Structure formats: C-alpha cells, structure tokens
Length: 244
Image (cartoon, rainbow, N blue to C red; front, side, top):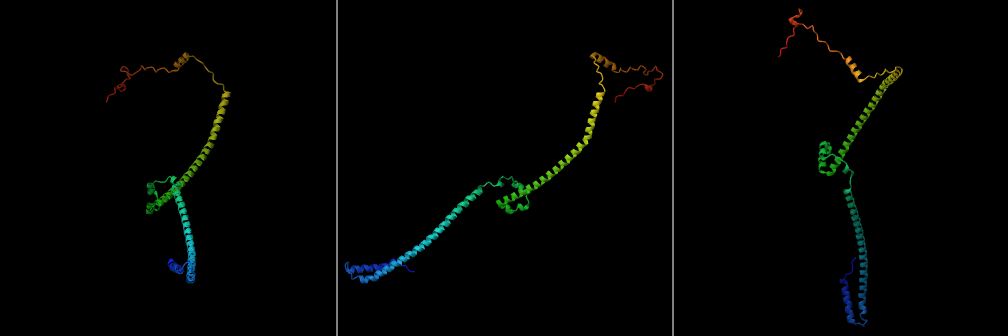
C-alpha cells in the first residue's frame, strides 16, 4: 500500500493557486477546472487519513511490544535484585559447619584416605571443604562406635564387680554372726564372773615390789683354772688373739 507524500500534493496546490489567480477572486469560471483537483485533494486526504490510522495501529502495536519488553525487563531487574540479595544473605549466613571443630588441613592430608585427597579437591575449595566434612563425619562415627564399645565393656566390668561384691557380702555374713555370738558370750561371762579386786598401792610400795621382782646378777665364779690346780693344762689356758 502506497501512501501519499508531500511531493504528490504540491503540484495540485500549485495548479489551484494558478487557477485562482487567473480567474480572479470573484469569478466562478475556475470552479470547473478545479473540481478534479479538489477531488484529487480529497483522495489524498483520505489516503493520508488511512495512512495515519495504519501508522497509528502499527505504532500502538510497537508500543505494546515495547511496553511488554519493558515490563519483562523490569521483572528481570526485580528478579536480579532479589537474587543478589539472596546471594548476599547466603554469603553472610553463619553455616553450622563453621562452628564444627575440624581436623586441620595437615591432619586431613595425613589421615584422610586417598579418595578424599584427590587433585580435584586440592584445586576446588568447595570440594575440599565437603571432603573434610565427610572425613570428620567418618571419624566421629568411628570414635562414637569405640566409645559405645568401651561403655559396654565398662558396664560389664561394673556388673561383675557388683556380683563379686555381693558374693563377698554373703561370705561375710557368717563371720558377722560369729562375731556377734562371741560378743554375747563375753557379755554373759562378764555378767557371771565378778571382776578381780582392785589393789591400790603407793608409789614407794610399787618401787620396792619392782626391785624385789628383778633377778639378781650372776656371781662371779671363783673356781677358775690356774697353775696351782692340778687339773689345769696349757690347752685350757686362753691365748691372746693375734692382730692381723
């Protein structure tokens, strides 16, 4: 569809101007030649109106598309801002693994299996942290199993100790009965036999009694062998001890 342009209208306007000047302002002789020109102007006007309406529709469609595009862009911008805020929250979030005491990197490299110490984990910090957490979990599970085993062993030893103590307590019952019977017998004997009389002595009498009870010194023998005694011999004479 072709639309009228200004160049197509200018010749018609020039012709009408010339006819108007040639016929004069009060003359009606120029109406007949100018009728087709007015018809052409009306046709151009209708064409221009149709072109304007068509352009208006095209412009409305384009505006609608632009508005839809702007709306989509606004939604994307809003989603972008939302995602940026969520990313910032995630980066500043205090994860629980940050408070978990982990083995140091040296201990991890020394104790962890080879599957957790691959070259991929060394280059990727995220994978390295996941491997350290997995190793920490396995170590804690191993230690927990060992703790339970030791706790069961401790409980078993405590049970055996309690049973042994119960047996010992059972063995001590007859001795306690014998001790109780002995005390009862002693009480009956003390009740039947009067206590011995108490003798009170002075200090001087006590010292004299103590001296009387002490044994006397052995007398020195007088019948020692000598040279006048015929039974005396040189073999019986004590010899001096030679100093070495």
